[in-house]
Amino acid sequence: MSTATLSAAAPLTLTPGAIQELKKLRAQQEITADFGLRVGVEGGGCAGMNYILGFDQKKEGDTEYDIEGIRIFMNKAHGLYLAGMEIDFKDGLDARGFVFNNPNASSTCGCGTSFSA
Image (cartoon, rainbow, N blue to C red; front, side, top):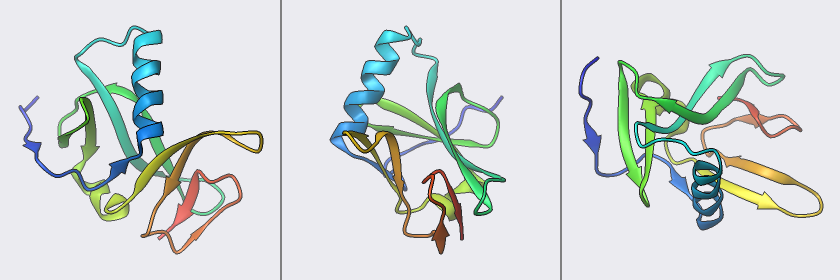
């Protein structure tokens, strides 16, 4: 495994609500420091691609970023789909969970976790 680069400017942003929820989850689940938040995409879903969001270890081909003390791991190939994306956390009566606001998505589905570019 290569020691990847820690890039200064992440291609995506986390809102204060998302940062707070991620730190809370990390503490509740006792996730160790060698894990970071994996953000990516994969084929599938009703609109063509699904978002990947979860704690994971760094893999070959990942670029690492730091946002407010949260390690972010992203496969370099996924940057095209995720550049400029904002991840938020909603905790309301109508919805609870992470929300992806992606300017690269040409269409999204009703579930909010699938898109096409």
